[in-house]
Length: 215
Image (tube, rainbow, N blue to C red; front, side, top):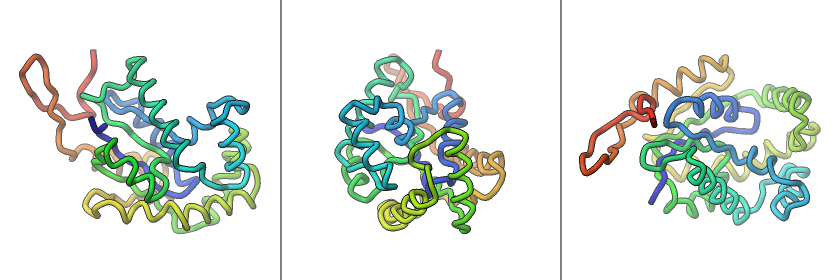
């Protein structure tokens, strides 16, 4: 079974996490942040050690542990009842991060829309990341050198993800706007997504993911 998903895409500091957390509060939207999942690991665990090693250098965690952590996290969400694949839409933040991850996940997710949160001014992203580092004590935003390496890694490896998907599902959103305006741009597009078919005792009916409520 493929999980229905939307992707929040953009450079570090573009606001993916902010928008993902908000969308995750809407019924039938389930937010998954790859970065949060890694940061939530024990630093002395095998995956935690891998994350610390790469994050300290501003590099991406290799594909295999990244996808494995994603699978474990999604299975956990299903197991504790927070994600119902038949009715819910995954809001993916920080995954897939390169074309190879796109290929690996082709049989795992059905991408309905991609929101590219673009920021044309690099220095704004640097300032955002520095502010976030102070507020959240985040290792991967620790200093300007690491920040610039993360932005270069995005330019060199991650941006090519957009080339892997059809243009008609990619929506450009100016991330320099106030967060509320970014959210409004995203919600306008989500409101136009085709409604999923939900089976109920042999009867199929259609419901919009933003309006369906699990009881």
